[in-house]
View 1 (tube, rainbow, N blue to C red):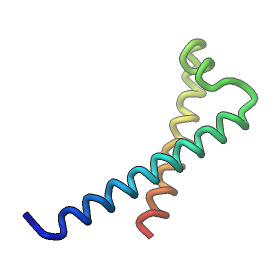
View 2: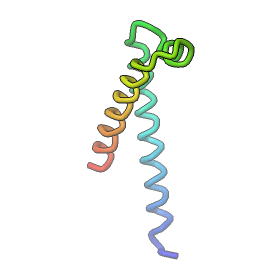
View 3: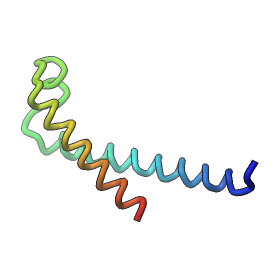
View 4: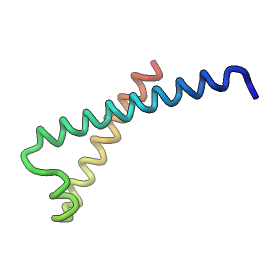
Length: 71
């Protein structure tokens, strides 16, 4: 096994965890700013248009976080 495997794995896990935490914080802020409950609208009301918009916003947040972490 490569001697650098463990440090690289630790770094990958740390950055992955940081990215997930930042994404969740961003998504909570978006949910808080929206004038209605996103979960209720998407799951219970079957609002497909809102689900597509939220998916696009989520991908955008993930791309920005990925670019920031990679440097």
